[in-house]
Image (tube, rainbow, N blue to C red; front, top):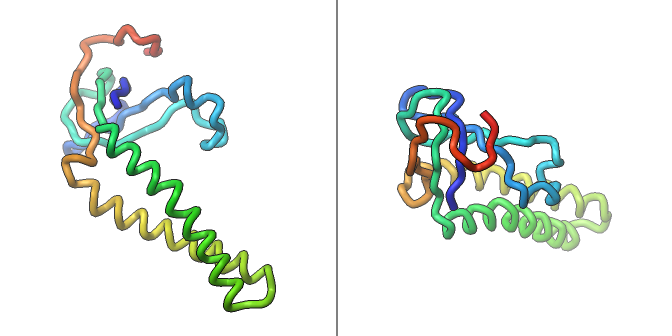
Length: 139
């Protein structure tokens, strides 16, 4: 999966790249529709203000999406099931489910730290543009 973005900051070998939200995301609403752009930190050494092409292997994007969406849902449902076994009050089922879903945040953070240094999981700069690329993006 390749995306074009603009380098907005650069320090210690890490680039902060601003990507505009693709049109396919416009109707999803998962982000609340609040943000028109996304900031991502990736390794590289490119001057601020330059446009770059960033590549992330499709297989890894699918794995990351599955982890980010499926794991919290499974832990929520598992927590509700556990709560129904342990408690008689439905409110406690919900609290147990939310607590288990909260655990997924810690698991995902741990996994992010573990995989962020692996080459296959790291987005990489594949092209640096001299000026604004011809893709409909705004300077």
